[in-house]
Length: 79
Image 1 (cartoon, rainbow, N blue to C red):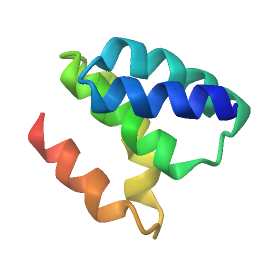
Image 2: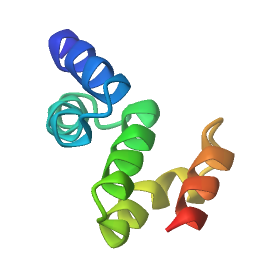
Image 3: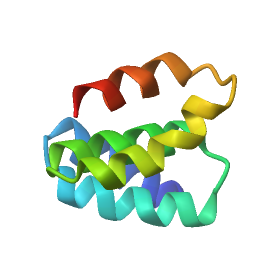
């Protein structure tokens, strides 16, 4: 999981959203409550032109009073 997190961060920062998404999927499977991973998974999906999936991934962040709620709303509005 630490490896998936490092891979996701590295790929995301390099703009390789497909690779980041794959690593984030592993991270979310291992840590389903990881809100940061959920946010970045949604961003990757938007970058990969998959807005419907991004909305589904980001919805739980919007529905809860999380620290990432505003970010999730922002990215959902971009699609």
